[in-house]
Length: 151
Image (cartoon, rainbow, N blue to C red; front, side, top):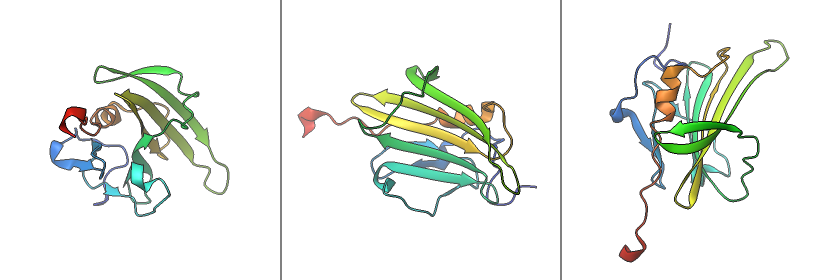
């Protein structure tokens, strides 16, 4: 039974009322009950992380990446609403007492002269990306373009 912290694998379709924005203008729709991560990193200025599930066990991440970001492992082609993107998918297990199975799906996509990393991570034993998650990943919007003539 899901708590008010949201289901780790979304069952509902994205609802525009749940769109979350970063200060830089990029945004993504998150599932009901998901919340912004409370930990902070040196990448906060360019990153949003939302978590779902009780522990939490699943994550959506969106990040503005710079030229130093290594995208060499992103070898799958993916379509983000008509925009070509490179994707990476991995399933792996971590040993230890609980031996959880992890699933990671990330894309890197360029809009004008900026690149973004959009990711879904889960500890729910997935082998493939659920269609409901695809809909949330595709809800990503980059910051509005700045018209140089307006500056």
